[in-house]
Image: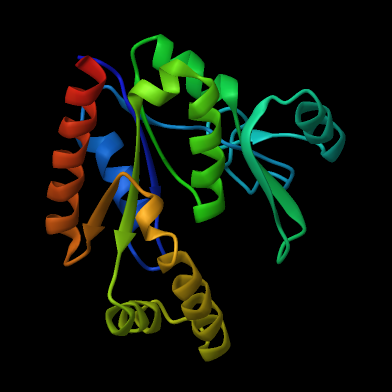
Length: 196
């Protein structure tokens, strides 16, 4: 089977993390991309398993060497997160299918990288998990987030929705099972395209 890369984005509360975890757990040959961060490991986290933990200096050096497909500051925490090209291209070349969830800007960076990399261009599919705004508010409220945090996330979701036309596929979220089946169908379509 031809390995592919699925890049998921969507608002907080859209279920993209759950979808990624389920693909890895239930679809043989799928793995999550191990991303990099400047934040310190939390108890139980292992370097190279949960993240590639880098010092700010190491991160700077990799940025300067253009080793990231995408990276961003997370201003709330003051840390940086990114996806090393080697964390994507090496597993793909070795026959593993990959899945990652990133923000909308991260997807744009992946798309730019695909323009310069034929392997990525052929094997990548971008997926937006779309949740109707009223339903999104219900989901976020159910997670026990503060009203200020919900308001911030809703604003971000409105901005993200403006980018929906840039994605290869859109899952109109209904529930966990429906969304997973929709993602499996997208995976099959990306795979067929990669083999064609």
